[in-house]
Every structure is written in C-alpha cells, then in structure tokens.
Amino acid sequence: MRRSKAVTLVDVARLAGVSVATASKALNNRSEVREATKTRVHEAARSLSFEHNAMARSLSRGRSGTVGLLTSDLEGRFSLPILMAAEDAFGADEISVLLSDARGDAIREQRHVRTLAAKQVDALMVVGSLTDARRSLGSALPFPVAYVYTPSDDPADFSLTPDNVQGGRIAAEHLLSTGRRRIAHVRGLPTAQAARDRALGIDAALTASGVPLAHRTDYGEWTERWGRSATLMLLDTHPDIDAVICDSDQIARGALDALHARGRRVPTDVALIGFDNWELITADTNPPISSVDMNLDLLGRRASELLFAAIDGSPLPTGVERTDCRLVARGTTIP
Image (cartoon, rainbow, N blue to C red; front, side, top):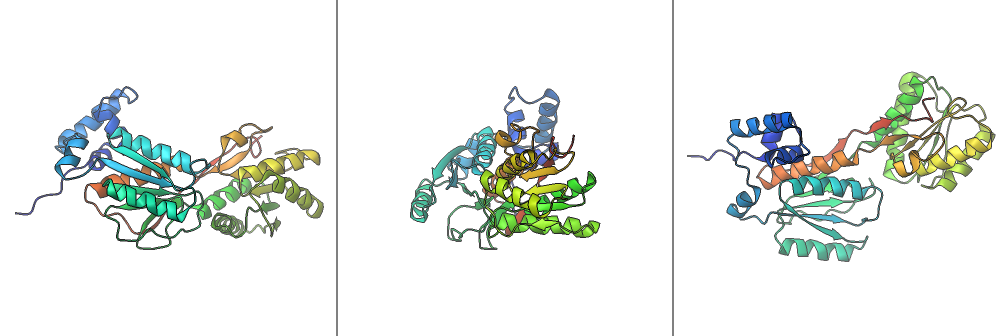
C-alpha cells in the first residue's frame, strides 16, 4: 500500500493562513504571536495530525536539520534583509543556518559549496545583490537550491527575484495619479538588468496612459553624484518637467539636491521618486523620498517556505518567480 505524503509545517501554515515562520512560532508558543493566531495554528495542526518536532523528523529521515545560506555580499544593501528574513524563518523551526560569504570569488564559492555538501545540509539558498543572472551551481548537488534576488542562468533551476518591470510601472502610475504629465527617467547603469526592466515598466505605464516620456538619460550610475549632475542637465534641457523617476534612492537623493539648488519646490513643482526604499536615505531628506520597495523580506520568507517544502519532499518549481514590489509614498510625491 502506498504511504501518504507526510504533513509538513507548510501545510499547517497554509491551512491557518499564516507564514511558515509564524506557524512555527505559534506551535512553539512564542510570546510575539497573538493568542488568536496561536489558537488557529494549533487547530490547523490538530486537524492535519501534524507532528511538530522538526529535529526529530529530520533525524528520523536521515537529515541534518541544517540549511546553507551562500552570498557574495554580506555588506550589501540587498542581501542582508533577505538573509535575515530567511534566518528568522529557518530558526523559528529549529533549523540551524550555516552562513558562507564567497566575497565575489568563484573559487571561494565552490569551496563553500563543497563544505556545505560535506556537512550534509538539507538545502541551500544562494543570495546575490544584482538581478542580472549568475552562473548556475549545476544540477548535481545533493540538496535543493534556491537562487534569491540574483537568478540563475539555468531555467531548470528555481530563482526568486523582484519584478522590476512591475516596479517601474507602479512608479510611473503613482506619478500619473498625482497629475504629472512631463515625467523624466534618470537611469542607473543602463547595462544592468534592473535598470532595463524598470525602463520597460515605466514605458508600459506611460504608453497605456497616452503620456510620452519627457526624457531618459543614456548614461547612468548608482550614485548621488550622478543624480545631481543628471538632474541639473535635465533641468537645462527640459525645464518644464514636473516629475523625475530615479533608478535608485542614491540617485534620487542627488536629484533632490539639484532640484533644491535650482529653486524647484518638491513636490509642488517637481515630484521625485526613487527605487529600493533604503530608509537610511529616503527618511533622512527634506522632504522624505518616495520609493519603490523591493520587498526583500518577502523574498527571504518565500524562498524559505519553498525550501521547507523541498526538504519535506516537494520538488522546487523551475524557472524564475518574480515577486511584486510595493510603493512607499512620502513627501517628494505627496505634499
């Protein structure tokens, strides 16, 4: 007789309508979870006859109860929030996390992968800081692998990355909703996938509204200096612009300096929006900068949930899954 598939924490979380991390915290009676949520999760676990003892289940199935997290950017703006969300999710279910930093060195990365394989990790999350595709680690690894933020170049792998096309679209739609019609785009590095995708989204939103793009820079960098110089040139050649979309918050901060220097009131005369929602920058300006958030925590949680399921025997999806970005409106677009 065929044995039915074991119930997993993912199943309990889905039935209770909560995240995997919340379900685990509820089952462990953690104080930060509301009592109503704990009750709902415990009822879901009972109805599914779920056995909540992750380590015992792992050992009984020949698993180590460990997961590898591999990055090349521990000091980066993007990888740390993803890694922290993933560590919270795995830690909530008493799964140990082994963190390795390859520092951008392919040889060092391969050595870390061999070490993690020797330690018999149950799964591996590979986190990057760019949305340009990276080389796959291959299909011969003895554990499931999820590529997060930076996708794999192999469509047979599973990758999870922000939808920058959607991000560009919601940035333009927000400005259109506030009455802006002469919108310019100050790009980051034009060869970067994120910059190309954001341009596609901006163009799609403007085309759908019948509003032509006022200007887009041909050159670009991810710096405040570039934001200042590009915006000053933009004001010289297109003095009638009433909004600027910048491909990063650093660029937007430089653009804000340039607008102030030219006596333009923000957002009364010119609205401004950036990308990444880096609060160290966006919340510390006058006015605070509106920005498109990449939902990095969501990426970490979603990847963890799928790896939880893969450890329990469910195959990972293949291809690239793109998660929605969200707009955080502040004083540079909303007075």
